[in-house]
Amino acid sequence: MSNTNTEIAVTETLSQDRLPALYNKPAQGTGALLTHEQLGGLIDLTDVAFQEAVRVVERTHRAIANEPFEILQKIPVTAPVSEVVRQVHEGVTELTYSMVKGGGKLATLLARGVVNLRQR
Amino acid sequence: MSSQLKSAIDNGMGILNGIVGDYLHQAKNPLATEMGIYLDGNPVPLSKSGFENHYPQATPNLCILIHGLTNTESIWQFKQATHLDYGKLLAQDAAYTPIYLRYNTGLSIEMNGRLLTQLLETLLQCYPTTVDQITLMGFSMGGLLIRSANHLAAKTPEHYRWPSLVKKSVYIGTPHQGASLEHFGHWVTRATGAVPKEYMKVISDLIDTRSQGIKDMRYGNISTEADPLHFSPHQEHFFISGGLSGSGNVWFEKLLGDGLVNQSSAHAKQLVPEGTKMKNQHFEGLGHLALARSPDVYTQLKEWLA
Image 1: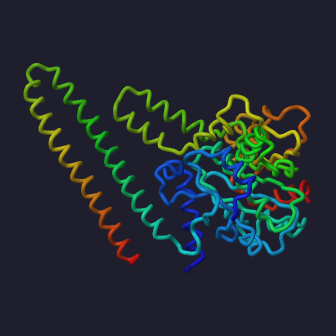
Image 2: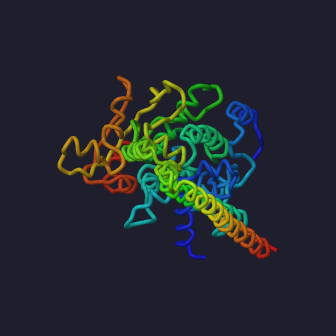
Image 3: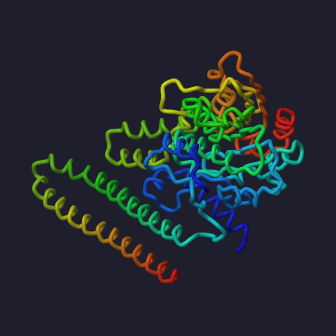
C-alpha cells in the first residue's frame, strides 16, 4: 500500500515505539495452523511460564521454610544448630531449583532445535 | 487441516492475548495478535486490492464489529447457526458491509484505541467504494475501544475522516463504569498483598499477573487523561445490557448484572451527558456472552440500525 500524505501525517502524530506496523505488513495467521515464528513464540512463552512457575514455587518454599527457622533462631538452645541446618537447606534449595530451571532451559533449546530442523 | 482446529487455536490465541497480551507485545512474541480486519478467520490485507478481493460487493454503509476481552471475531457467531452473526444479518436486511476487527485485548484500551483510529483511516483509503456511513458496534471491551478511538480522533480532527462518517455507535454489554469481576480481582490482589506473610505476597503477585487490558476494565478506562470525551455529540449511541438476576432485585442486579457487567455500567448512566442522542435496552435472562449472539438482541439492533 502506498504511503499517502494523510497516512504519513497520521502515523507521525500517533507514532509510538511499540505500535505494531499496520502498514505494508500482512497480518499473521495466513492459512497455517501456527507459523514457524508462532511456534518459536510458543516455545519462548512456555519457557517463560515454566521459569516463572519455578520461581513462584521457590519463593513460596523459602517463605514457608523461613518461618520455623526464624522461631528456632530465637531460642538460645536451638539457635546455633538451626543456623547450620538453615544454611544447608538454603544450599540444597538453591541447587535444586537451579537444576530444575536449567532443565527447563535445556528443554527449550531442544524444542527450538527440533522446530528449526523441521523448518529446513 | 480441520477448520475446527484452526478456529480452536484462534480462540486459544484470543484467550492468551487477553491474559498476557501486553507481555507478548512487549516481548515481541509472534503470538501477540496484531490489530487487523478478518473475514472467515483469515486476515484481510490492508490494501485496495486486498479489499477488492475480499469485499467484491462492498456497500457504502459499513458496520465495524469489535469483539471483547479474550475473544476473537468468532464471538459474534450464533450458537445454533455459526454461519450467522449480527454483521451478516445486517448485510442481508439493511445492505451493510460487515467488517470484523481482531486485536490484542491484553493491551491497554487506550493503545488499542490509538491503533483503531489508524486502522479506520486506512480502511477508508483501501475500501473499494465511497463510504457514506460507518456504524461501530462493540461488545464488552470493544465498546470501550470505540469510545477511546473517538476521544483520540477528536483531539486532532484534521487527521481523520472517519469520525465524521460514524453516525451510530452500539455498545453491547460494555462496562462503561467498570466491571464488577475486575473490581473483585483487584480487591483480592490487595487483600492478599496486605497480609504480612511472604507467601501471601507470592499469591498476590500471581493474581496480579493479568494484562493491562483486563485492569482497564475495572473502571472502564478509555484514556489516561483525567476527563476524556466520553460520547461524541455527533453520533447516536445505543446501549445494550443483559441480566441474570431474574428477580429484579436491585442489589443482586448490581452485584451480578449479566455475570460480568451490571445494567448501570452497561448503560453508562453516570457518563452520558444531557442532550446526547441515545437509546438503551435491557435483556433480562441474557448473560454476558449471550449478548453478542442473541436473536433477541438482533431484533433490537435491526430496529435501531436498519
